[in-house]
Structures are given as structure tokens and as C-alpha cells.
Amino acid sequence: MSNINSINAEISVISPIDNDVYITRPFASLTHITTSLKQAKLAQKQWQATPLAERKILCSKAIDWLVTNKHQLAEEITWMMGRPIQYSQGETAGLEERARHMIAISDDALATIELPEKPHFTRYIKRVPLGTVFIVAPWNYPYLTAINSIIPALLSGNSVVLKHSVQTPLCAERLFQAFTEAGLPEGVFQYLHLTHQDTEHVISSGCINHVAFTGSVKGGKAIEQFAAGHLISVGLELGGKDPAYVRSDANLQDAVDTIIDGAFFNSGQSCCSIERAYVHSSIYDAFIEKAVLLINQYQLGRSDNLNTTLGPLVNGKAADFVREQTQEAIQQGAKPHIDEHHFTNSQAGSAYLAPQLLTNVNHTMRIMTEETFGPALGIQKVESDQEAIILMNDSDFGLTACIFTQDIDKGIHLGDQLETGTFFINRCDYLDPALAWAGIKQSGRGCTLSSIGFEQLTRPKSYHVKHLI
Image (cartoon, rainbow, N blue to C red; front, side, top):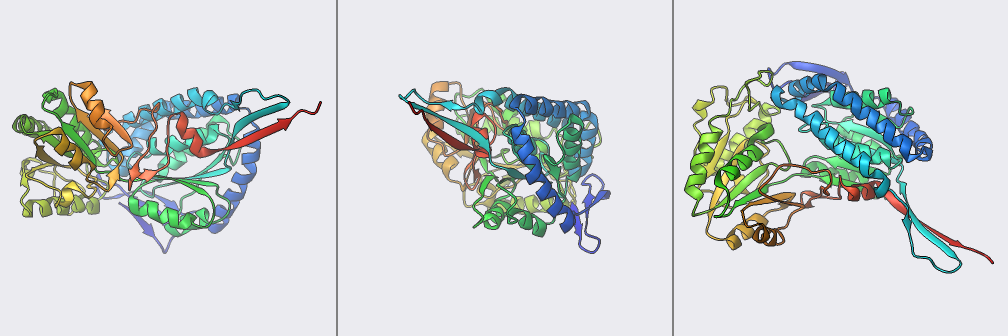
């Protein structure tokens, strides 16, 4: 985990791989923070006046730099937060897909809205930047989550100040390096390593026009409190307890493969991972049998080992939380299907944790209602579509939900009844940059990605011109 050394005012990143200090970084001083915010405000005026075509070129060059250096970025991700090295380069690929798409659609997304002709009048609406956007990014997908807001914010003409997780400070530095190498004017993109107290100071400083936060529900509520009374907008992408439903007509093997990957990839540390599943009784036993077989094929080990398919959680505290939630469910009657002894690296108190699948679960158990953020999945038997929909909606969260079926029309009809930001059929745990990424309930508010994602980072400015004759 990351420890904050209050005496020396620095970040110490403890790698979950070996529990040793990987890097240290000083926190920004108050003078540095003040200077950066003033610089961002001044630079934004120049950047707003820069033609969109040039902004697109510079953003593309920054993405080129990140892709060119993907091996270094992957290694750093692995050591900072523990993702197996064989998967870490996938983050750069996802970053590129999202960024290139947002760049490609920016002309249309930011285009002036022309209104019908009216005698003696010209009327139109421009999309103009907000000013300075403050982005607070998490450690679990450190580049993907940040780029969702960084690229559209810059394309829209905003300046950006990035505060990255204290677990992944190198990601902020690499992004800054990429945009600097690309030739962005000084001050347009900056990062600050901040304490919680200094994060509050930045939000309430009067120098920020929008906050884009990705993280926990607790963190999101704190951000809202920091911003209260300052008349600035806030976008929140928070937690999830995302459900899957497997209908009786589903392709069983595909459903098993997809759901298990969606539950255990990145050790389950994803806001949109599958955390609970509902399986029709007619295929329930077969689903459990296939799922257990697949889970037991995972290789839990050091993230820098190419054979590892399941790495440690970000720290021992996070792993112990999952252990506690799982053991509590077992005490309440849940049945575990995975023998922890099969995963010899799994040790209480460490970041290394065996995956677990639980049946005989219900919604009185935290494992089915509270965000787990780890490699544990509860599976509940259902008798009908209606029962599944009721259970899927019985949640404080609403980020994604998925249904596995070969009847697409029926699946869409059921999807219309789900309280969720994104609905999948025969898929899960994926962000398509052409689609709006948004959550409801405690999963947050606002939107990133797609053409709609530009709306949160701009404001409409109406032009009403009367022609005198």
C-alpha cells in the first residue's frame, strides 16, 4: 500500500508484490500548488484560442508517446498496484482506443449548434470550455480512468490539473511527460502529488471550474462536500456491485468464461467487475461446475512472473476486507467452492488472496450487497426472469449490468427494466468509448466518453445577433 509520511511529507509506494518500497515522491508544497493553479488559469486562455485542429494533433502526439513507451508503463503499473505483467500492457491499448476515439469525434461533438433561420437574426450555440479541470484519478486502472477526462477536457480547450492516487504517482508523471513531449504549452497540463487536505484546498481554491473524480463512494461524497458552495460542477464515477444474469437459453460455456473473467480480472479490483451473479435453476448446477473448474486454473503469484494470472490485491488491508466479507457470508450459510489451499500463496494478512466462489447466498449477506472489490463472487439460483430483475435492481449501485441469452429481443426488453448506467448482453466489464459511461444511484453522476462526455467538460454559450436593416 501507499503510506503517507507526515514527518517528511512524502509518498512511499509499497509494492504489493514484495511489500517493499517501490518509489517515494514528495508532496507538492503550498507554494507549488498556488503557482500551478495560477499557471493553469493563465495557460487556459491561450489554449482555448488554439484551433481544435492543433489541439487534436498535440493530443495525438501525447498518445503516440504513451504507446511507444508501453513496456515501461506496464512494468511500473505492475510494481505499483500489482496487476500481472502479462496484462499490464493492455492498459495502454485501452487508453489508446479511448483517446483516439475521442479525438476522432471531437469536431462533431464540439461543433457549433446552428439554429433554423429567422428573419433578421442569426442564432447559434457554441460549446466553450469551463476553464481549469481538476482530475482525481484512482490506482486500479490508473491510465484508463484518467484519460477518460483528460483528453476531452484538453480537446475542449480546458487546462488540466491531475491529482493521481498516492499508490500510482508515476502515472501522473508519465502523462505529464507525454504531453510535454507532444508540445503542449506550459501550464495546460500539470500534475500535483497531494494530501487529502491539499486536495480539499485545491477544490475550494476558487481556481477550479470542474472536478472529475473516480473512486469510492466515500471519496465521492467528500469531493461533493469540498465543492459545496463554490458553484463548480462535479463528475463522479464511483463504486459498483455489478450483476450478471444467465438465462436458461444462454450459451453456457460463453457465459461462464465471460463472467468469471469479468469477476476476477485485475483481482476483481474494478468498479464494473461482476460481483454477483444470478443463474437460472435449469442450468445452475452446470454453471457452478464449469465455473469452479475455470477458477481453479488461475495461477496466483507474483505479478512480475509471466505465468501469473491472478496477482495480489493492492495491499493486505484490501485483501483482509475481502476475507472478512467472505468469511462472514460463510458463517451465515454460504457455501465456498474453492479450496484456498490450492492457492499456496494465499496468506492471511498479505495482499495475496485466493479467488472464491460462493453459493447458497442471499441479499442479507454483504457479499451480495456491499462492494467487494476483490476476487470473490456470489452466485444465486433464480427461477424466472422477473426474480432475476428484482434481485439485480436490489442494490444501492447502478453502474453496469449484463444478461446472457440467445434471445436478443427478450434480453433488450429485460435490460429496459434494469436500473443501470450501461447494459450488456453476452458481455461485461468493458468500456466502449463510443458509448456514454455513466452510473446511477451510488455509482455516481455525470458522464465520460462518447460525444456526450464532452458536454460535462464544456458549457453552452448562446449567440443572438440582430441584423439592423
